[in-house]
Image 1 (cartoon, rainbow, N blue to C red):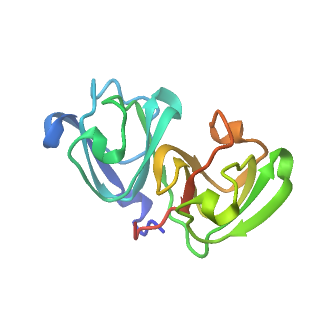
Image 2: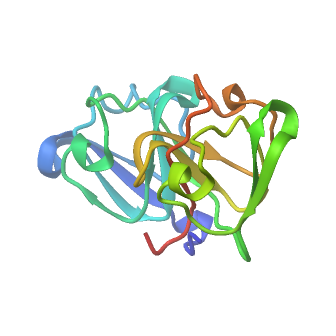
Length: 182
């Protein structure tokens, strides 16, 4: 889990690589960072867990970041230097739990999971997850195995179809709960 209190969370965006150039410190959700930085080539997460987004209003490609330094956008698996919004991932106390379904509207085979999965196809003989119910904690789905590719943040709630979490298809290669120990 992310063990930092909400009031202590902080992320710093830098326009240039290696923490150079104009910077902006942020300690809350921000739906539009463009007024503060024109581009983002490096990030320092001083406290907390964050999701950053390629577009304003928490849209576009998403990237999960935990405490640490990211000297260039490739370190957070970014495809370019465009970061336009960010969101704090609130700490979760207790266990993590998610139910995944092979078909929309919670139909088909169901699996209840409480830990990470580095390769969905190997574990479940399918790479399609078309709906899910996040019971406890926040989770990140990745399009590719081994936590690579496009990322999607799933908070507690029901996702009746993959488009509910922002995906264009039901392909999920790996997933994991958000914890501090990654």
